[in-house]
Length: 328
Image 1 (tube, rainbow, N blue to C red):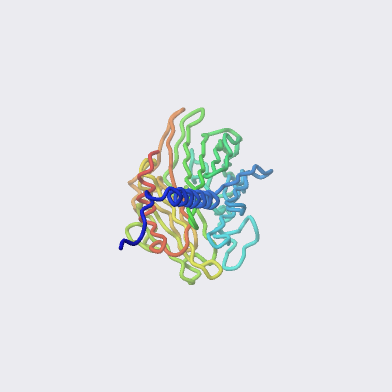
Image 2 (image 1 turned 120 degrees about the vertical axis):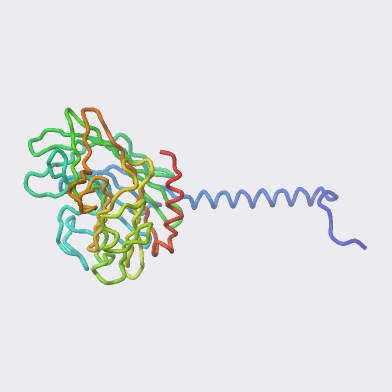
């Protein structure tokens, strides 16, 4: 005696099973759509608010001190993971030092001899000129134009920045691509360690807080040993309110002078700097400056990955492999 049945022998069962399969597919598809990350970008008097699934991720501020910045940067557990000072008073584990270290920014310490990095007397300013695009959706996009202006009010150069926001589960990342173009004359980005694309982490994350903070690059150089080294990426991780979180800055192979050198400090700063060679190599005979004539340009490309845990737990190496294969 044979047991079981063949769907082909029973048209009613065949119809029932087909309908069931269609229902399962529709439910699965609907769930996937509901789970898909959604970015909402809204222009504000200060810039652009960036939300992910209804919760604030960061603000693009067109002016803070002498430049545009992103602040705050919200981590995967819902806490701020870049320092609040000087946008707010210095909080727990923070120090009120380096007023120009404003969360997440791009600038440089020597452009035609003018300091755009610090905010001391005679410094330059990066002036927001307008948004070319502000768009939300599965990804978020901000495109902005800026003039680099000396203390005499004259424009030296200009940049166009594209910030693209992505998310996958509890990970998110920001692609930061900027093209700097010489304005009305020659422009020299000088050789100085004071630059260029930087993040200042929350006070509890910094190595000197002695709470478990750590700097590490692709070669395994850690903390003080990571300073001045070339590397395609550097990760800075540590605890924030009881949970370990990390920020990785990655440098794309198509970026100017890839792989970058790093001005990474145990007090919470880390920056990608392709210009400061004589500082990083400790050799005054080396000149890392870059000269441009009117209309010349260079492009820098970075990805900032925000993750839970250490660089190994987040598999930063795998994420860099994916990033370096993105065509730019």
